[in-house]
Image (cartoon, rainbow, N blue to C red; front, side):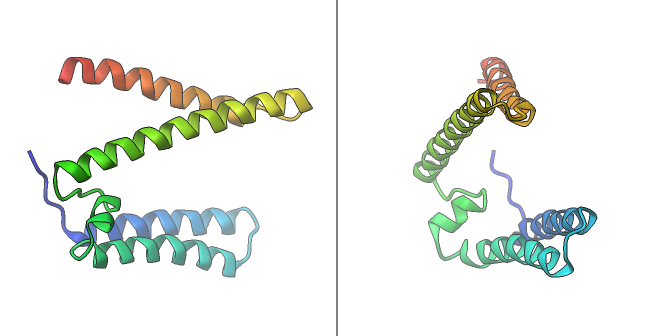
Length: 129
């Protein structure tokens, strides 16, 4: 089943995420210019994907709409590689922080979330596929 979303849905989500990032920058006693830059980067990225996805298979895949099975497989492999890198960075950061006496809690939370997401995914897709 293929779900067709309007190209502007991605832009709307990008603007909401950019707005939240900008608001977090301002709440953390940041400058207005940094908040605007945060918003502009995320919104600009999603706008670029929205305009380019009809002309580029890569942009379409990055926008979450792979054009065929080959691009869907590329997307799956890229997501798996990104998850693997995230897990190694979180575990590596945890080990380095622990060894140097720094706060390791953030790394432990991210590593735990990656591990739980993987286990949850295996269980979920075991019953769905």
